Length: 446
Image (tube, rainbow, N blue to C red; front, side):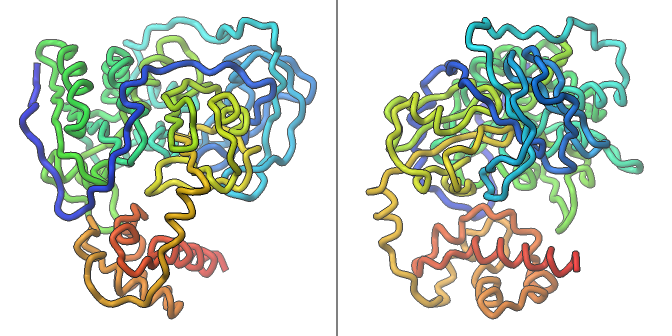
């Protein structure tokens, strides 16, 4: 057994926001099915899925209802047994409406998964495994929603020797990965075997923050003899879970500016993603549900819940004792999450957490006055990528977007929010950077 419990590495800079992980001791529970599920076809980065069902068609739980539109896409499966009520535009968490399949759930059904069969994955070669992973519809469950099979398809000319499993979960409030590693440890190890075969990695490094010792010990205790798998604890710091930072911390390799992990021989996968593959692949099943941390001062029954995809957020919040408004809900964590435009939006593959604030909490956060930049340098000291958020912010205010990208590496920023968190002038730096990137994309498209 390879167990490196005392190796508490970390990266330079970063921040230490309050952890607020009160749900880490709460076991995963299943929430009952909503009467109506809303399933957007664009629940992943890439081309939206294509509907393969029609209005009024009956479907069983687990049945494919939308096909991948090419390699850079992911299929969709029915999270419940019911009837297709409509295929129409519906509200999304990002604001614009998205083409969605609306599924009316049969209330009297026992909702067993009726699609899929057991299979032996041992004879499959890497390309066949990648195809099987695409068939599950799996995407990165850490929040990015990048199709998992695309990430595992190492480009020609590159070679991967190290698979990094990201179990850091450094965002405040979120404990989804923690509970999955504790309760689905065997599924995680099974998924690791499939994923490492798909990408060709010889060794596996599992990075877990040192505030999750129980999860690290649980996984280490289940490692098979002789397996080239190491559990390595890293110091609790935000944003330790960034894949490029984690690669450097665990391997000493540095992904070049604008580069990708495969360029330094690594593939990074979220722990919950790999554990879910360990559950789905042997049964030829698709992703129909995910574990979501539901927490915050506005929730009466916080915890980690296994939710069917498409469950409307107003249904979830009503069942767990929230009586606030849409403007008080954040999807994801408080650092990198986004406020929802409406409580009608559904839980999708990308939703790792639902954070319910209160009017009082928001009032305290919004009380801080915005001041001019005083060039104190705190944002520079916090940025884990050693960028210059101060100069980027000044250029953004002047709308010098090209200079931000050409001279100050704007595209390397992954919008962790460390600069905004430390700014004594309350300048919303991350929002400036997002606007700048959007403007550059529009200019590029034009």
